[in-house]
Length: 582
Image (cartoon, rainbow, N blue to C red):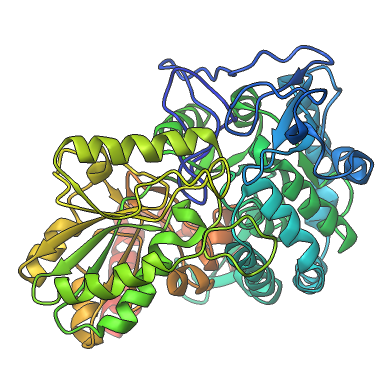
């Protein structure tokens, strides 16, 4: 989960992520202190676009007119936890450059107050029957499907993505809401385990909410990643303070309003808005932090969480490979690879950035793949006519272009794309396929987080596995083969938290009963399933020793003279072993 702890910073590691990838607009100094790009003074407006393109003057620039009516946004903006002393930030629609909103920012003191309010509200929420808490999520399932057109527009305006990619977020939130709405009771129910002494010891394990969970979510999936950690944390009985990326705060506020409409009590979910200073303040106040963004920032958060001895769930970067084996159905694999590489304009933590092709089928596969890539439609339309949308910020465009230019300078060849499509919009970049990328090129090792994929040819499955495992990341991988049994064996050798066979990323991500997360530099902790809710609780063991009043206690046993009690216990342990008692 990498993104900010805030949202802007300098000159430390840049947030390159979204879904699990580059953070967004923040960086941190080498000493771990977040630094804002713009200094916000009370009442001031940060005139920069979401990508920092420079000031827009409504008097002289038509693109500075508001895309959405300010009065319509007022109820959402009123949900930001702020005293309005931190100023505002102007947010611009990536696909068009039009002004979206002057976002009121929170300051570190606002974070403290928001956490305090959440902490005050949490005990009553935790005392609410889990079935009632789960019912809120089931109502959200219905609401997000019924009102999808409304939120799809908002997601597209803020992120610039195509409507098809935006719909993935609606479907995902419905899936996760339904899953935890139905399964939370079972996941959280106290369970009885074998006690120390059969019959005499009764031991149960309960799940206790940690208290207040902080969630720092990125810009690339503003609905999905605002709620992916919020929903299990809430249904587990916690209160939550959410800090979305400044570029996509409106979507997060819409989600908060939707949850309240579905029955979530006031103050249980707080939303703070801002950059790195706000994220850093949140890490200092909460009882567990969940972060989606860059590996560099994730390491800083993990370090601070370790010092505070709080839990940290981190979904970080990826450099995800897709292997086309010699026996793969190439038509099917080409279709799947296009989607795996270029969904959400490649701004997806699980997106494929490396195509690993068996040499026996490489040419045939590339013919099919490149034909499909060339037919992809780029558009800012708020309908399903676009296949690929805009990049979300100028910083992302700069990173994408930098990776492509670096690869070309080192001898790579362009098979498709490699063009900044200003004819479509300010931040559009053509889906790009590179060949002959040397291993030391930036796009061979670093996460690009854009519509760029490189091609590597291999002579065997063994070589493919070696190539797939050669980066520090281990988030997602994909294997395409007609022999799924063999593909499963290969999957077991790949160092990745999820491996999809004959799919790019959606099968594993959408299997919400299974845990999702990364190995190595791709993070720690897991989303989804039992693991995704248990991480927001503490395990409490309660043991009741029976028979104490009748003299059948360990204290009585140990009080026997000359080691008699110890000999009796030794005999008992041997009997339990013989009986096969676990």
